[in-house]
Image 1 (cartoon, one colour):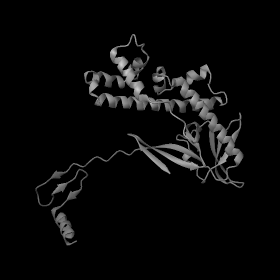
Image 2 (cartoon, one colour; image 1 turned 45 degrees about the vertical axis):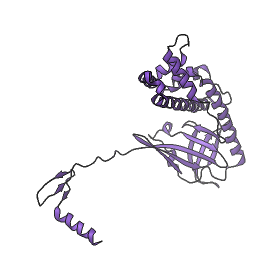
Image 3 (spheres, helix red, strand yellow; image 1 turned 45 degrees about the horizontal axis):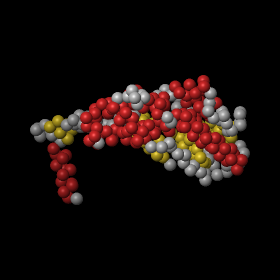
Length: 289
């Protein structure tokens, strides 16, 4: 199964790979335990960074907050250092998505509500600036301008509640938390994933349905550039891998020139010549049909 999302430069395809049906109960239980720890970790991180004062922090594309949290100490003791890092990044993505939807909703209100007519240009400019939004959110009410107080009320009103965990358990892995490999002997031959589990220095080896590992291949040839994967635990355990493919530029339209002569009627920019006798013959064929 593939879900396609198109951007201006690349196409992002989410490719599904199921874990083989022969997964043992012990390995499944270890994956479930890991997913529950990640769920608790995401809730902890979302609660910590949900406050409006962290808007600029979670909107920073460089995610410097991850390094700050590393120095301050990780918040989830039952996850490893690197699992904490990946869990924090997933949590920040949830909070960032919430703020992104909030800003878009606020822009729609400002654009359509006649009550914003007098300050619409200022409001739209503010909503395009992370720093100005942050200023509206954190400036004490007694020091904020009337417009800033109004913008703050709008943002908090359209933001909504914290994201809720779905009924499915899931966790994300980066290139340091899994290793794809082939097994040529034993009962399950083919593609496998070695996933860092709940015990230090221990990996859970799980068989995949199918034999190909191309979807997990490194983008640059280096092991540290393998794609991130999301492992979802339902009745069957499934891996979702996001891959990026460059989009081919659209072919530009042709410019046509008109010639009143008899030998050449139309000439396209690629050099194709359309002669009148050929067009007449084509027209006769279509009429006969």
